[in-house]
Every structure is written in structure tokens, then in C-alpha cells.
Image (cartoon, rainbow, N blue to C red; front, side, top):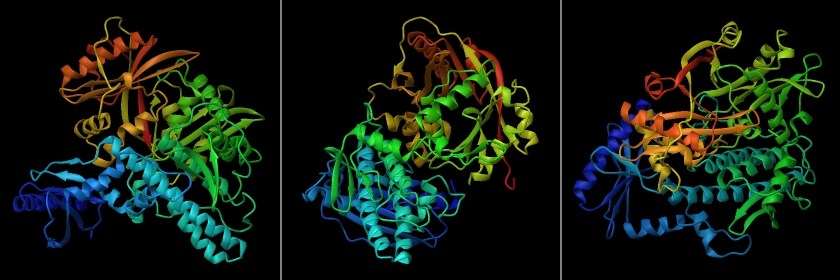
Length: 591
């Protein structure tokens, strides 16, 4: 937490204490960017005083050179706003008041989304439930999609009349709206645009870094040129992030939906496409086909060098994910990080969980055969570093500098500080490869394996638990030291992992502890990975680890694996054995 944020939070708590003393029975909410953990050196503080009856007159005050804006409302007025978050409902056509009302009150809804209830004793909690926050995300995404449709209609008109300078202005605004849609879909509030880099997890980059759109030269209103397909891809991905990927097979896409100008929308009847005033209802299968059209097979976009056969690719097509997974499986077999790798796992681990953004991906081929790859998963909102995966090089292509070329390709293309995934010490030359390339050891982790234990499963799991998001967020703050925004996004991040299942998220409600276990199967084997253990003391930690072994037996996993950065004594006490160690590396600035 920055000193700016900490100073203002302390002042917010003390002001709330004074307001509660002056207005017995009232409530005080901290709202806006500060409630979301964001502040700068000249930020103010926004407080909302809520009374049962007519709200009293209040004014802004200054403390320690910081402006504290206090507004007042009645409980009834607040509940009228909160009622809009009871459920999502937006008609595809027509002009009933509800959608207009919601769009007109997005600022009020955003204040409610960020609101923290201050109790006057120095503690705060989120006002909304996880269900209400989800509905807010749906409304916020719908609002941004509608804004993108409006801007695209303007853009088409400006291009058609040759007003290129004005069109460039609209393109810049459209880039901002798309980024807002992505952050809204990921569960973030629609804060002022200056906070977009922080919400996107790209605070180390200039604000324009994550928001570029292709140049206008050659664009035409009757085609899908200058990369408009990428705009469609990003907004469809945002829909999938917020609403989930549709089930069922792809279906033929109605014409001319995948051409210039058409953008996706969502309504209570389902999905739709719109360009200007033209609407086309879409099934989930048609939306899947549209997504495939705008994310063409990666090898069609490969920018290969004439000699190396390597290059950056765009998108994560299904066939590409299968190739990446197959090569990774071949390369880790027999080492301490050996585990089942599937196409769905690769997609979920390389794609940004909260924004749906694709990785920076370099691929090498010998003809049609993939011989290597390396990827950078973009930072999640709230993360500083991006995660490096690979380089993964086929045994037949090693010792020829391919790994170094792949690594350099993604390092040159990435805009963020980087950290590797776990690199096994027992893999020949792997750790030396990074040190020779200028990377520094960040930490060492221990890998352990255990045998599933048959017996009654008496674990409390997350399946069916109400308010699970709050439980996980509280554990993230208490045991992992996460700040509020990142802690609240923990469960949504976990859910995007292809291995996540509520039945393998084990809980100890009396202490607020948890163990996240991830199950994975493929044709080579199966495992239950103990990914996180957040527990109040050794006894609870060991209880959860032992319960995970019985869950593994129930789910017929072949082995239990754990990777820990802490003392492995509790795992060993539960019968697990150390099978290896890994290191993570970071690239110092300037390389």
C-alpha cells in the first residue's frame, strides 16, 4: 500500500468516526478510487453519510491539506439504487425505462460498487454481496459495449466522409472504452479513466501502452480492415469473461456480422450483434463461431524470420493450444515438475484470467512441426509483474540457440517486469540458461509428492457455500497480505483456471482458513495439486493437507503434488516427501 493511500485511509476512518458520533444510527461509506486502494499525492476522499430519515446538510472539509468530500443520502435512496443490482435485464430492442435508468445511474452504481462500510473503529468491509458485484459487472460491461457501438457508428461515418483527423480522435476514445469493457468484465469498477492502467495491471507502462488500436490508413466502412477484428475479439472475450463461454458446438455466423462495424452486445434474451441501428440476435454457438473468425489459427498470423523459423503469433486457437500442451508434456516428463498438461490448461494459464487478454507468444516451427515456444501472460489487475512460461524446446531442436531466440522475442515484446514460472533445479541446464541470460534468482520453492489416502471425506468444501467470494477475499487479505482490490479478485482468478473445482477448495470456516487444490487429468496421468494453503496455525494447515489426500483418493487422482515457498514441515508431517526444488527468476530492469 502506498503512503498516499495509507494516509488517506487513516483520515477516512477518523472522519467516519466523527460523523457517526454526530449522527447516531447513521452509516458511513468510503467510495471511489480510494475505496478500491488507489490514490495519488493530491487525491481527495469521498465519504457518503447514510441516514434513516431526511439527510442532513453536509459540506466538504480539509484535514492535513487533504479535501474530504462528504455527501449525504437517505437509506431509502441508497436502497433504490441498490435494487438495480438485484438482477441483470436489458432488452435487445425497444425503449423501456430500465436500461436507460441503469445507464443514467452508472456513476451511482459505481459508488455503490466501490463502497466500503466504515464502522468508526478502523475496520471496513465491502457493502455489496458477491452476487451484486457480479450484476454490477454485467451492467457495466453492457454500458461499455453500447458506448463502443455508438463510437463505431461515428467512426464509420467519419471514415466514409474522409474526416480522418476526427476519426483518429474517435479511435482513441474507442480504445479507452474497450479497455474499460475489459476491466468491467473482470470485475473492476468503472473508475475515472486515469486509473485504467492500474486497473489493467499495467501501472509500469504509460497510459497509452495497453490501449492502441491499428492505424486508420486504408480503413473502409465496408470491410474488416485495419484490425477491426481485434476490436471484435477483445469485446467478445470480455463477454466470455463476464458471462462464461457458451456451451455447445459452434454454429454458422449470420452475414455480415464479422465485418467492419459490427460489435457484440448482451441482453436478457441472450447475445446480439449491432451496427448502428441494425440488430442481429445471436445464439451462443454463433458467438463462438464469431470468436473463432476473429482469432484465426495462430500459424496464419506468424511473423516468421527467414532463417530461424520463429516469430510472434496472435491468439490462442484450439489447435495451437493442443500443440503447445503436447510439446510441454514431452519436455517435462521425468522431471520434478512432471504433471498432466492439457490444451484447456494451457489456454487458462496463458490467458489473463480477469481481462481475457491473450499472451505474448513466440513459436518456432520446422515446416509444420512445432519445435519450441515461449509465452508471457500479461499481469492481472493489481499485479506488477507478468509471468514468463518457457522457453519450451523440443529435444531434437536443443543446443542450437532456439531457446535464447524465443526468450528474447517475448522479452522484447513485453512491456512489463517479468518473473518466470518455477524452473526445476534437476532439469539439465535450465537454471544456468536463465543466469547466463542475465536473469536473477528471486526465490526457491520446494516440490513434494504424496499418495492419495483412502477413507471418509470429511472436508468442508466450497461447493454450495454462500458468499464464497467474501470468504476467499478475507483469507487472501488475512493470510496472504493482499490489498482489498486484488483480494476481492482472487476467486474470479481461480475460477478461470481450467483445473478449478469448488469441490476441491477446502475450507475451515471457524478459522477462515482454506486449501486450494487443483485436479488435472490427461492421457499421461492425473494429479491433485495443492496450490495454496492459507491457514491459521500448523494444526489447521495439517488438517487441510490430510483432507486433501482423501479428496484425491475420492477423485481417483494418481498422486498429490504440492509446491510451497514456505517451510515444508507441515506437508512432510502429513506423509508427503520432497521430490525436487525449483527456482523462479526475474529480469532486472535494463535488460
